[in-house]
Length: 148
Image 1: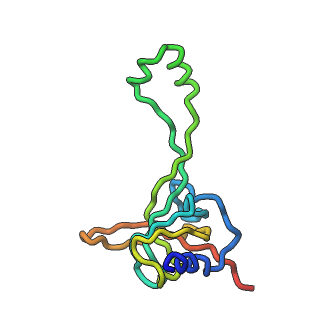
Image 2: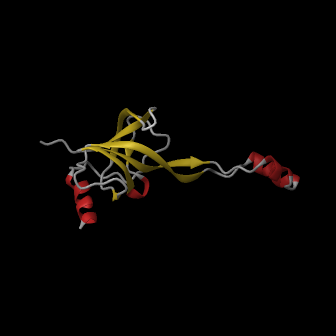
Image 3: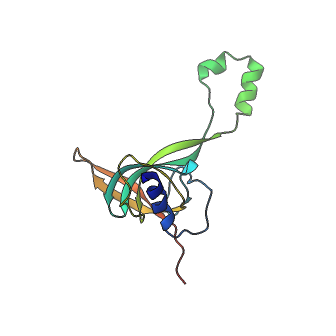
C-alpha cells in the first residue's frame, strides 16, 4: 500500500509535457529533464514539500587507456588509437539534490521513488551538515502546467 501511495504522490502534481530526456551532467540552473531511469532515492525528508534525494544524470565519459597499455600496443595500432580515439560513452552519474514542490506526507527517508515528472533545476540551497559544515546542492522543482 505504501508503494502505491508514493506513486500517487508523484502523479498528483500537474505535469507539463513529459520529457523522457534525462538531466545532463553537469547540472546547471535552467536545465530540464528527468532522473535517468526515472529513479529517485529519498535521502532525507526536510518538510512537507522538500526532501534531499539522489538522482541520476546522464553524462559522457571518454574511454581512455593508460600510457603503459598504449606503449605495449603495436606502433600502427597505437598511432591509430591516438589519431582516432573511441567515442565517449553515456554513463549514469549519481547526484544529490533537493527536490521541492512534491508533498512528502507519504514519503520516508530511504524510499525509492519512480518519477513521473520532468524537473527544472531552479537554483541552489545550502544546509548545515551534522558535523557543522555547510553543503550546497542544486534544487529541482517539478514542471507544472499553468492553470488557465
